[in-house]
Length: 355
Ligand code: ATP
Image (tube, rainbow, N blue to C red; front, side, top):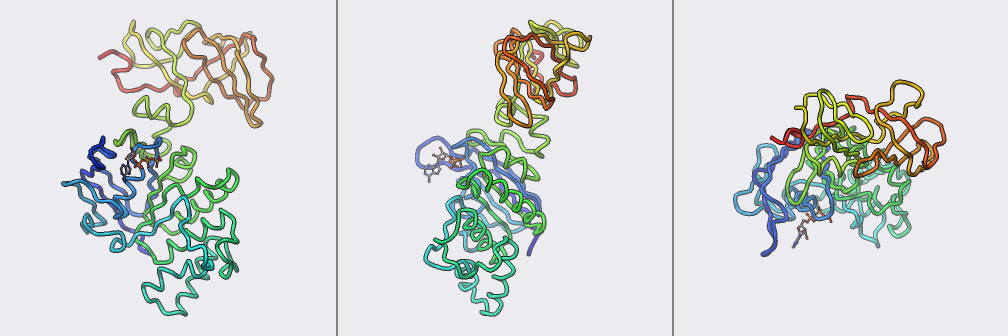
């Protein structure tokens, strides 16, 4: 399998009809062998971007698509060497599993013996050993998606394109398939582009994640970059849960009604907003000196492996706290909190200093 193909989109834009652009001109480079996830809310342009790479859509004038050094901008999908997996499987329901997987190989006139050997290897790879003779309509959703993946890989594509492949499956199955897919993509080392609106999936599968917002790239980075260093409020809100508290800056911290949040490198006496994740807030016993924020528990949600608290700290929105400590907290209880300095995020300067 070719594992070293890079893909470049250069100034690729797309407007359908006379509406607003589905995609503003974007530049995007996908590294050889990486899994790049396109993530964002409905309508942000993820699928359009994927379809431009596939050759199912073509960019507006001036845009270019490169596979390695080849300019494929004007090539249709069948000339690009891509394998695709869709949300709705798109399998032939009346054929067997094996016939579905063999389809592309037949078109390419691969000898029967080689087809058979490859089908067996692919069935092994997607954990469907021995199911080659089953009919598609006798499979579960998860099994169908494994067949779709095997079929996409059968023709040894240069690039694997996946459009919400796990969305139709129930939560447990989604998790199993996500883990299998993760392993498989790593093992194959194929360049893959994966569209999803599910941030958990994006974090788990992406070497890098592109967060899209209204036809533009809001941020591109590793899952850790996106989670811990969001480039904008949009990204911060879209990925995970984010607390946001406003107050006035002092030297080294932000003064909020019920205490302080550490905030390095800010000019004093400015209105500012600090952000931090619920899991980074520590609950501190009131009778020790460590508490820096004091609040009243509004509600609690026991989630099994953790407890989520909504705490009123006198700001516009309550602070959300998630703790893995075993304990029971009650609505109305007065508690102490602390946010470590390293967990407080700073958005670009204009959000803090008014500059
Ligand atoms: P979703 O998760 O809902 O699929 P998406 O992020 O994949 O969303 P796109 O499917 O790329 O978004 O769509 C981006 C915008 O372009 C949307 O406003 C959509 O309605 C529009 N659009 C996409 N395809 C077409 C088309 N063939 N004709 C007209 N408008 C289109």
